[in-house]
Image 1: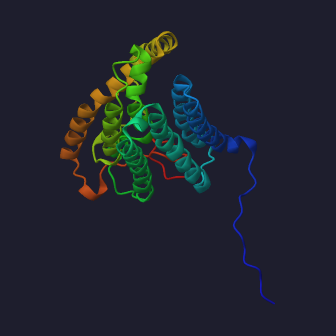
Image 2: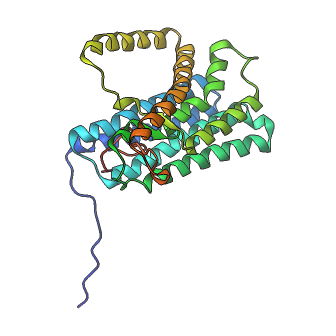
Length: 276
């Protein structure tokens, strides 16, 4: 008598161990909701929804480590959520906003951004098992991570919300920004992984004060504050490149194994551990 083939099934889990996957699903829902807001031309709510998705994406991996609930299922779910929330959603928002006015070139920019986001995720997933890298490479990403790319590609829309129409609402400007950010995602430019930075003891209190001030600015002038954050991130890119070159000079890294700090997995894009 032939035995029936065994089917892999999800194991029983406590509710606490499901929290990271729940956060990932909430991030996915936030990204999809931003598309809905874009269809109804509620641009402020659409940008806020993507911001919420980015916050949830930053939390799920960290909580997964704390609860020791990492899994391959969670990693795959997180990759899907990242592609939708930070790849498809911001590109469609720009298309609904003004890229559609350019016709075919606008849609090409949308497709290019989405394709580069997918390629970035695929490139990362193929290098998860690479353990030959020096420990310091965990301080860097290879290219711009997907959540940061979503913020950068929406800069024209956020700037328009901050200063009003007539300055940054040119569809060709939005298309050019989308193409440049798409290239940064798949580039080999080292960028900082800020969650890997350790805060010295004497800087703990000033850091908390800065976070409080940032929250106050976000509450009072959200769009200008978001523009300032994006500007600071862009300014950090040359510094990260110089820092990587300095470290690589002391510990050579082969070109085929450039920095691949953890990203787009349920371990959070800033962790060095293997995917769950």
